[in-house]
Image (tube, rainbow, N blue to C red; front, side, top):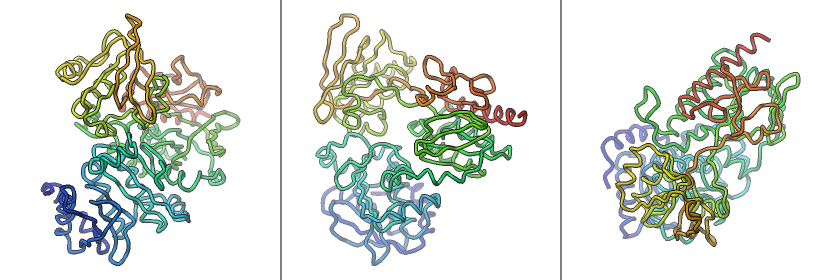
Length: 510
């Protein structure tokens, strides 16, 4: 296969950074997929005198390991690491060759302390924008600790294996043939799953923060940057860095940027915030907030952080339809991400619940892969923009069902259908299918605040004033978790700045 000239030009620059020789330990056959992988490896090997190819037998064909000469590889790719996984391949090349991964020192120490053998296998699709984070994290863990190894498995080339193991969402990580985790995960979260949670003792020596931001999405990062630029002691408690934006593929309304993608945008934001002295505590979730002499934020691990002011920017999560079968078949046919999991349903019948913009966009995407797409909308009319409705109407393999109240998602060990009630006739119907994509909006991540003094409205949103202040003095909030009229990335960033300026103004008046 031939890599295009632009990719080869970029790749050549990275290959110049190899710190040692690299061997592709390749298991190849005579089949069509093996030929593709062989051509891919040969094309790259020809670009650098530091790269060679060695034939060997691995558990899957086609596959290959990356190793230094004379060593057995611990980072393996089964299939072609193209699409979103090409970056994973390049980073693995550099790291196996000796280039240090960009990981916090504390995380490196936790990885290196793992003293038991762990072999991870991650099933991916090349269109999945969440998969590379998991693949790259497990590759890093394999590079840093000889007890750990990892294989990325490209589902398209190993479809029989995917179906046999009933993998219906990506990324899905297996450990010793048992599901370890599924969905987007950071390296901190994966390390915690492998090594156990971070002790509360590690937070005992934290100073009192001037501003403590809870949340790591656009609002939280904006707030932390604005606070840090004031020269005050700023901390961040982050559950999942990037928040909901990490599930956003195409962003075309970020002013000054004609197009970007969620993970790319948040990588740029993280690079920006790292220019400042912000204490970022990743993979930590707040479970309570209270005000005594200082504001106290209690974490789920029992640690208590103290601050003179706080900014809540905990964002929102996908809203559930809350019917039988939804949670039972999560990752077994029920999912929220058409971009990630859509390829797993190629040639199959699927349903999308929700007729707003996100639902209709999902249906349009899935129509190019699935055999047939059913759109179930609770209301009498679709809520999506007309341009999206027109596009949907032009597709021959989509059926729109309005006035449909979803009753149950059915199945045995995986989804086999969906039942709904026609709200006009009260008749119940059942559709046989294999996948259900839930796209009915977001719900604020504020359930942990219900017993606090932070006022919420009837939708569970945090009520704020025009300075971002909540009902609890010294506590501010910003972003999709608040009662802001519109939920947009750029609005969240602006609200984060407002909250930080409001907190600073509060501090100087105390």
